[in-house]
Length: 105
Image 1 (cartoon, rainbow, N blue to C red):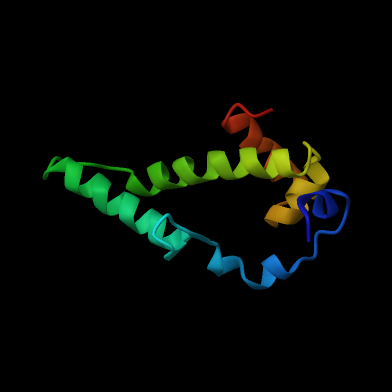
Image 2: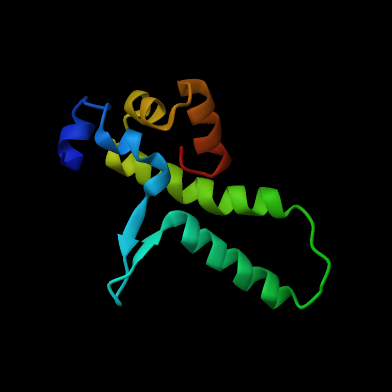
């Protein structure tokens, strides 16, 4: 299914069944999941801390993932908030709040 098809009203996709299997193939030909990428990024982040105290890691990770997610979904749906909220499983009011939070609205 093309991005254009999804953006044109069909929000029920096979991707919904494989939501936890977001993946890509790297330059070595290996399959890398989104989860793998996040895990590597977090390991690198903690290694760079070198024992320094840190707080609010949960919020840091959420904001680092949520902002580009919202940005890409809005592009994918051509800024249609109704389609984007359905795609994300959020109500439209929550989507608008998050878009404002990240300066995307």
